[in-house]
Image (cartoon, rainbow, N blue to C red; front, side):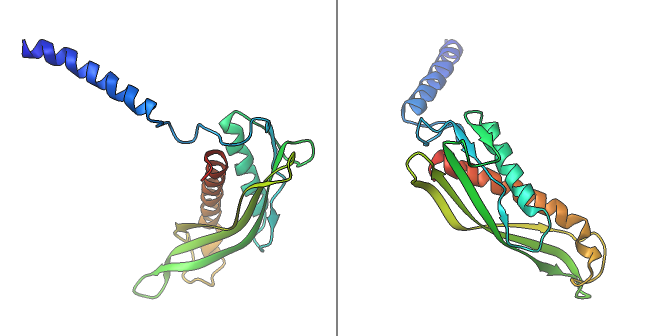
Length: 182
């Protein structure tokens, strides 16, 4: 008798709990949007690169456009004209710093730090909906070759991968902030 009661009670309790959680306002993160309903197209022009790192502006801009497109609700363009809102940004600094050394004082881990300024503006009202003047992202990586921090070959391989990871994380964070009003 207890087994039959347990077989019935567990699914009923699970259904009740899931209904209660959805009624309390819980939802999956990353799926909502707090943007005005009339915003249907978002312009993401190429970010400005204020660093000596080649092509970082394209990488970051492309990742942000892809992340917005993956949300599925908005038409995303590479220009700000002809859109309802625009997301602009500047990559202000990228630095490479030794993160750890071995016993011979050789660099074994590097830290890439990227700082950027971002602004999201409603073009209909002219109002800035979201901005952050100093977003910062970090990524550690291992130099592939070389023995010191001044050896250019130490950065050639893995710094590109670290930069890709930073660009991807940057895009996810910015789009989540826009959509979820954080």
